[in-house]
Amino acid sequence: MTDNSEAERVCFLLRIDPNQIPEYLHAHQNVPPPLLLALQNAGYRNYSVFVDASGLLVGYFETDDAEKALATMKANPINDSWGKTIEPMFMAVDDSRPVGTVLPLRLAFNLESAVQ
Image 1 (spheres, rainbow, N blue to C red):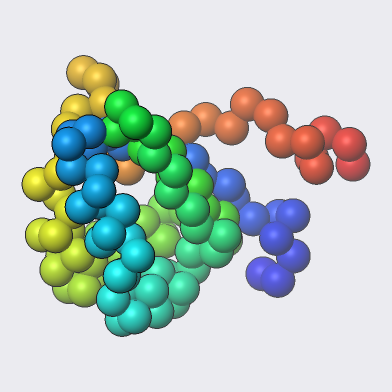
Image 2 (cartoon, rainbow, N blue to C red):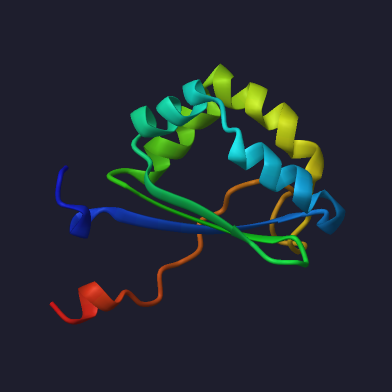
């Protein structure tokens, strides 16, 4: 698929220890090129992660098939290596989300879709 207007939009919440924010930001300034390539090959596009001072993370990406993209990355050994770097920083967002697990949020509104 080349038309991003038809892409699945995936947004998720995670939380890190607020004391780990500098380390988390540093790690994301130095993402290994093989991991970047793996994300692209898995179908991630327009992937962004935002963090606030409390450690709340909001992630967003677009893809043709979210379930496939997530499963592809979960099965990739490069992702396992990255996980060992950042997973110790994670905390629970709330009781409904396992620590460090990407559970997509339900899309409630998208401007471009609404005005078409």
